[in-house]
Length: 126
Image 1 (cartoon, rainbow, N blue to C red):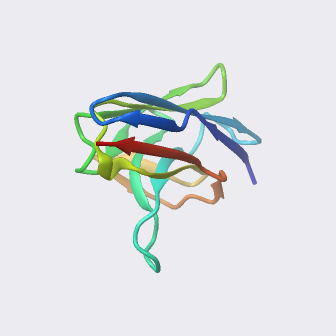
Image 2: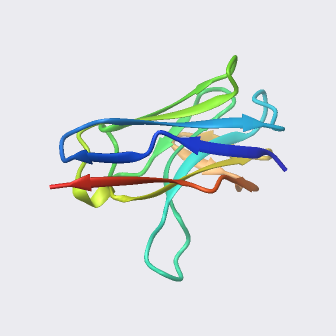
Image 3: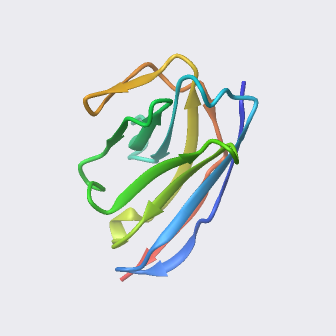
């Protein structure tokens, strides 16, 4: 399994920006996909915020489209999430995940994530 370590969380006011980073080791950047997830109500699967595959194809949750941008820095083995125009409802733990047998086609991710980070907390005040 890959090792994923998130950073960049913090507290900002609504309308502000944050950039989350995930340092990845033990995962081939030339295969599979990676993504950012956040918690939902108890008993529900984490919400997929955004994912990106090895070709650069991306998918976003409707709630973050136009505000968040996912990208990968292959040279630094890092996954990034630029978050702009933050809202109080974006307050959550954000988790980085990676899946070896995974791809994104026409905005839909096929295949699951099999490695997860411990998360970084984002708090947005109104």
